[in-house]
Amino acid sequence: MMAEPMVKIRSVRKRFGPLEVLKGISLDVLAGGVVCVVGPSGSGKSTLLRCVNRLETLDSGRIWVDGDLIGYREQDEKLHMLRPAELSRQRQDIGMVFQRFHLFPHRTALENVMEGPVTVKRASKAEARQRAAELLERVGLADRAHHYPAQLSGGQQQRVAIARSLAMSPKLMLFDEPTSALDPELVQEVLAVMRDLAGSGMTMMVVTHEMGFAREVGDHLVFIDGGVIVEQGHPREVLADPRHERFRTFLGQVR
Amino acid sequence: MAVSRTGDPTPADRTRAPEARLSGPASRAGGPEAETRAGEPELAIKAVRPPRPGRWLTAGLATLFLVWLAYTIIVNENLHWDVIAAFLLDGRILGGLWVTIQLTVLSMAIGLVLGVLAAVMQLSGNPVLRYASALYTWFFRGTPLLVQLIFWFNIGLVFPTFGVGVPFGGPKLIELQANELITPFTAALLGLAINEGAYMAEIVRAGIRSVDPGQREAAESLGMSHRQVLRRVVLPQAMRVIIPPTGNQFISMLKTTSMVSVIAGAELLTVSQRIYLGNFEVIALLIVASVWYVVLTTLATIGQHYVEKRFERGHHALPARIRRNLRPFARGGA
Ligand SMILES: Nc1ncnc2c1ncn2[C@@H]1O[C@H](COP(=O)(O)OP(=O)(O)O)[C@@H](O)[C@H]1O
Ligand SMILES: [Mg+2]
Image (cartoon, rainbow over all chains, first blue to last red; front, side, top):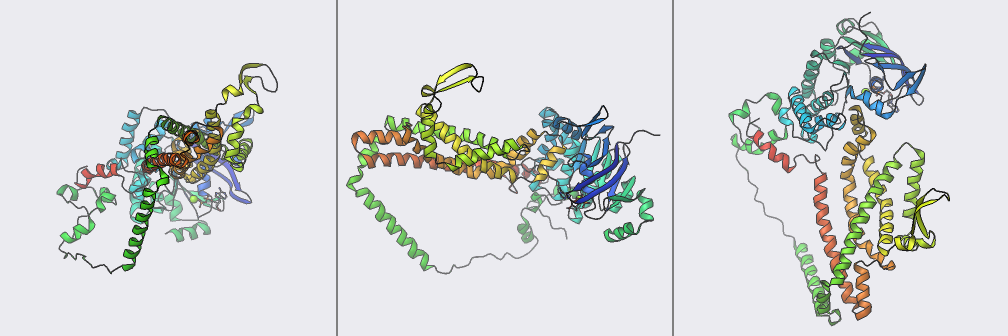
């Protein structure tokens, strides 16, 4: 077998009260791979991503990122819940980009990008500022460094949010519908940054409705419906020839 | 045709990358001006207001009333303006003023710390902490401040000594007499601060709850600890909601300190009372005290304005600092 996958998801189940949202999901993301997750609204896509960086706890199943079991330590055949500090340590290596950006409104673009390294990694201000400026340059926002989020367009905010995650040098980036809250004309500038990031070898899990992006950038496409993976495969193949009726119906709706 | 959207178009402006002019606030400035430059006629508005006789009438009546009020006060022989003037800068009055300021600042500072602690406890996952915090606010908001002040002043009747040692009757390492420890000032500070903390807890809690939960999640995904999330992300944003009512609490506290006069706290009202008990100039000294209270609240109101502005950071479309920073871009430089 080849190298261990960067993300290994096994038999993950999650319920909110009476509603079982994830009913046994298993999935691998290879290092440097881009997995696109698609599915109707409410099918559990966000929940799956949030389980990977443990914004949600699992009811059963296991998730490993780069060989580390997320949320637990296995010792003497027993699972021990991680302490908050250990959990934070795991999260440092997993970037997350949200549908609604969630930039820190009281900090400028530059300060947003500096926040992680300065607060979490105790980097020096000068060093963090230098790196933040480079990252803003990379997402095409060098000239917006001193703007507050309220002064930026949605597309610009999302690019700052991506830079903010990248500042932690993560091993894995999670994107939860990063372009769904954007005006149509702003979608492409964010997708361009993500395409560039994929090209640079970042491992990515992307929940999206942008089938063009999935076809072009994705290595693997997963269609989730009703809390299970209904269909998966190489994006070009599954999109050209969807097997399941539900997937076909879904594709008809998003196109 | 291409209408430049900046007020001051230059060649550099037109050659900027398309992305750079997406919808930056800078590029919106001067829209209408640009229109007129494109050859539109200028339609100036110089309209005549409709007459408003009612306005003049009420303004006149109000002025008349105020003049009459001022007149009756100034000519009133019972008001002893000379005495008021003499005592306004009296050493004892200024001493009392200083105690009032100290009590206000210290009890607000301690109250704020207690309030943040109680609010964080209230929102924590630990049920014991939650109940302890609820008990605190319930008790101290449920009993009159006056009663609490008298209670703290007389705490020696309940606990004659305070010590550090093994609890539940073990040996004492340090022991202090309550009567030495509890001066009117410390009793006043205890009463005011602990009572204030109970009110601040509610204000801080509302502030923390006003912060979008997504902010917490974004900070946690960066790997921040609970403490870092609170200190770096949640509290600074909660401040925007916390500051205005805290300013009101501060202004209210300036005057609430006068309650300390029941335990002879040596603040402004107490010293005024001491003076008028000697010279019987009751009204004159109450006016002296009131003048100082008004001065303090006025200064505090001005301060409140500036602090609120400071914490509005990032919530206005264009704060002054950014407007300055934008100027080079508006001219087309990058
Ligand atoms: N914290 C929560 N509490 C209760 N129900 C939730 C919670 N989060 C998500 N859900 C429910 O779980 C289902 C799946 O949600 P989600 O993962 O956000 O779907 P998707 O991202 O695919 O649209 C939805 O029905 C949603 O209402
Ligand atoms: Mg979702």
